[in-house]
Amino acid sequence: MKSIAVFASGTGSNFQAILDAIASGQLQAHLALLVSDKPSCKAVERAVANGIEVFTFNAKDYDGKEAYENAILHELQKRQVDCVVLAGYMRIVGSVLLSHFHQRIINLHPSLLPSFPGAHGIEDAYKYGVKVFGITIHYVNTELD
Image: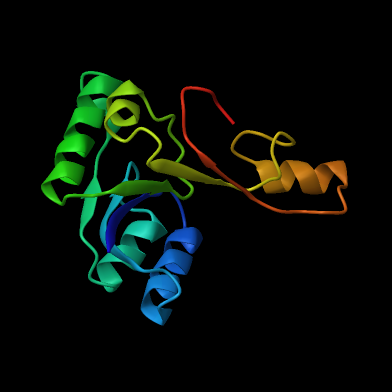
């Protein structure tokens, strides 16, 4: 069974969907850790309520992206995490995590890429007036969605 970590910065609705899929047996995985750059976000509350370990950080407390990604990497390795799911994580993943989890980090993006990249995919699509909505799930690499 794969051990996964979810990274989230907001409400955690996708985090909850992953929890529910594991609980129902639709997803054969162990959710080992929630990582968040927003210690007081709803995703953290959801994790705590469900007995999932949490690692939170404030990027300003570190000497740059490499430093906080090394701290995250340490937490992932400590729990023998196999893959990472970005579910509303509002930071760009850098080389430290990408090199250690090559082809093992996926992003759940709230639009049908390449249309409406960025943080507000659903809102942007709605404002544009699109008739068909969806999400894109993709492997994370050095290119931005």
